[in-house]
Picture 1: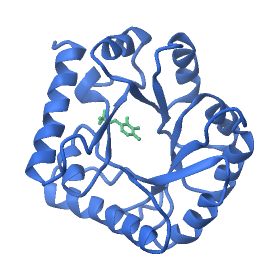
Picture 2: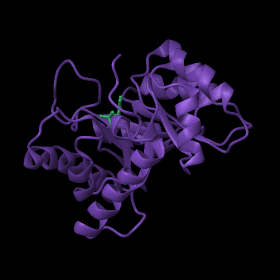
Picture 3: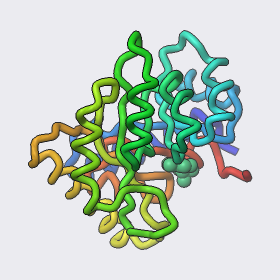
Length: 228
Ligand SMILES: *Cc1c(COP(=O)(O)O)cnc(C)c1O
């Protein structure tokens, strides 16, 4: 099995090649290493290989990992679904929350973000496939939610996040990501100043970068296949 450093280097290479192929400036795509299910030792191996941004989906698992890695200047992103009972610990311990899809959740995060911390960076999760069982706000409902969240002082609305329906077809992958890119453009045309498109995972990062992703969330290509 390849080392975490070797896998991380290979992912960085894939990102650089996709940036070049699709006319994106070098370094315009940020790599978030998704460390959910993997132990602190694996995160440390990635840190030693220069990685500073990590994504976690399960709060109970993430909190002890964050506590075990203080003082290293790491940036923690909560990328899982957010229920009301999780907002306090997300507001206290994370730098970013990507899965915000309801105003009530944003209002709780805003109220619970301590005043001595910088505003919590937030992405609104968009349900691109309009899949009924999936999390995320519909594209039609997005403008109203975005302007309400942008007005909350303890949050910094940064952009949109999406997890499109899985497919191996690159054309279908791009079509889903294009919907997110166009939704972000409409929000910015209407007066917001959003800079983040959080989209692309191990299996579809090239399509996401082609459609303007600024942050890709990569787990298995760095740490290995998850068994849980
Ligand atoms: C697990 C997860 C990822 C990483 O997926 P991989 O296919 O392992 O790269 C990205 N985003 C979210 C929201 C996830 O839950």
